[in-house]
Length: 193
Image (cartoon, rainbow, N blue to C red; front, side, top):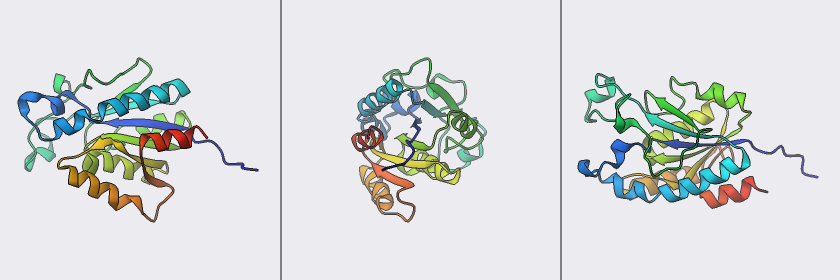
């Protein structure tokens, strides 16, 4: 008899903000990012139907932030329209919108506490970019003792080769099955068992 306790998952949607989808900026990531909107909407609908939390974690930087002292230009500034979740994503009143001051959704936010209060055991992470904010959130989930799933069809990066290389780097890892790379369909099937 299988006595495995069911997972209580959260869907973490990372940095799907208006500045990253602004056609005037001609970001090479934007066309790729548009392709993950539909799978994110589908998966968030499943999570809500099951009563599982959905969190939109978004950049909320300040113009004088340390990270802008390198090549990165100021964007997604806290309180600006560019730092808001894109309209194309279905966001409901029960979802949490969590502005974050750096790359990981766990860094200097209340995310860990909120997940513990809900009994969450697994973080499914999608959004942009695979090798940056998504990956740092996945790794921080593990560091905070949550299982993590890097959602291959719900995240992207530019160039696409970087996205694929990042996924391939974590497909076989010493933390498996605590850290997995899976499609949204595979995650859904596993959670519904």
